[in-house]
Amino acid sequence: MKRYDAINEISKYISDELVIANIGFPSRELYEIKDRNKNFYMLGSMGLASSIGLGLALSQDKKVIVLDGDGSILMNLGSLVTIANQQLKNFILIALDNGAYGSTGNQETYCKKTNLLEIAKSTGFKNVYNYNDIDFKTILSQNIEEPIFIHYKIKPGNADVGIIDLSPEEIKSRFMKSI
Ligand SMILES: Cc1ncc(C[n+]2csc(CCOP(=O)(O)OP(=O)(O)O)c2C)c(N)n1
Image (cartoon, rainbow, N blue to C red; front, side, top):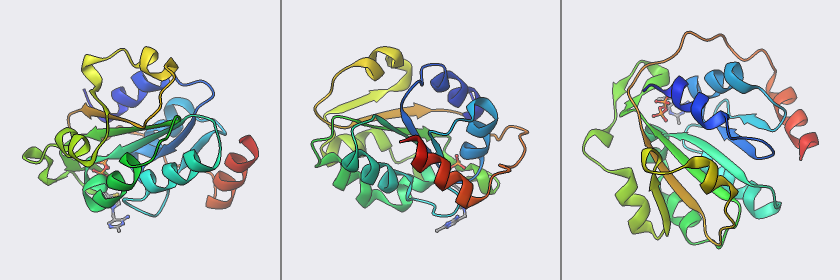
């Protein structure tokens, strides 16, 4: 399964949640699959989708789902430590791990060897799952006391999707109005 199909699968269960999508193809693929005001397409800051999601989860009650990439998580591992140490009832980080910097041409990341799920566990996440072992709908509907980390192992490859024809200002303002 490639990223597009993984996002498509996840999207089936998304209703009122706020979604932060990682820079590049994850955002573009989500835009094509299920554009909505409650999606925030992160356009510039590789590594910061999880941090943006953390800030949102701390400042309001709606559930926040972050669709992140393995390369971006590796770039900002400290964010995992900060998130794991918060008592968040509304935060789900999904690591779409294709073992590659997919959006810039599929150069390999160190996730071929380094295991993000084990890293998440060791930073203190109590709710750590492999996507393929869970019923995401059930996980999403559960009342939780601590943040969730979901490892979604996928194959590299970008879908043939267009660009996001919204300005950064539009993305931000429609997202803010939707909260
Ligand atoms: C600080 C920084 N370095 C590099 C880039 C260029 N860049 C944009 S997306 C990307 C790859 C992201 O890979 P990953 O997070 O694994 O997600 P994928 O595209 O594979 O889903 C890179 C290197 C950037 N935007 N910011």
